[in-house]
Image (cartoon, rainbow, N blue to C red; front, top):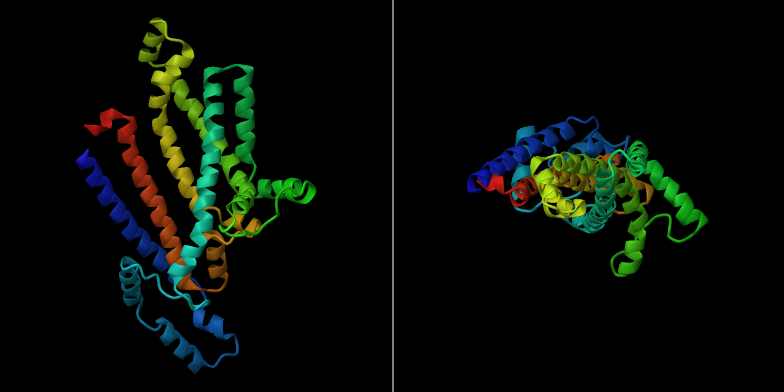
Length: 312
């Protein structure tokens, strides 16, 4: 178990190093000068050069990379070119929207997917199975931003149950949760469709194992076999999907946050790209990549809890 942990930790560190190099290089080669963008098209070359020096853009590429990484390791994400405030403050303000949204959507996805996936597996080849699989196929096919606009039209414009967008802040938790409900549903339903299909397939494979047939032959009911034996062993591929879904929901909600005008990390990233605020883009993308890698690392370690064979 210790050796497995050390191997995965080493892989995590190498992945983060490679990701930081790729992120820095890709963003730095993007066309456009942030200093010239901030001063406008008619700015004097001397003013542009002075602003570049003030922003640290006149240093070499390698020096800027190591400066950025060194500051990152000390918790200093730099200062935004546009807002002139520390990037860490911008991210800290926005993460309290994106993180609850991702957890809310993941919880909804899991609550929806597990029961229907289990029902589809236990009624394999019947009408309920075909109906569930057809519904999940539709859920996968519909883009989440189209579904988000559909929910806005029904529940915000026609029924007026919730607001169409915006976020009131966490000083009023009820209003905050209501503001996140439609975005969370928009993100959760496509992911629930995927998770339900994976749950069904994994459970069907497990129900065909010899030890399940043996348990049934000893008189254990079908539902009892599922609860006591099959469900735990079917959780390994499901855990992988849940981990990947959380990473996707945290890092991939840019469109949904813009549809609902949520001040989250996705909207911050979108605005920073438009404003050529490179330090915000680099730090935000690196933080999202680190979240993906760390969650994948934790899911991999969770395998040992679900499957005792991996502890050896």
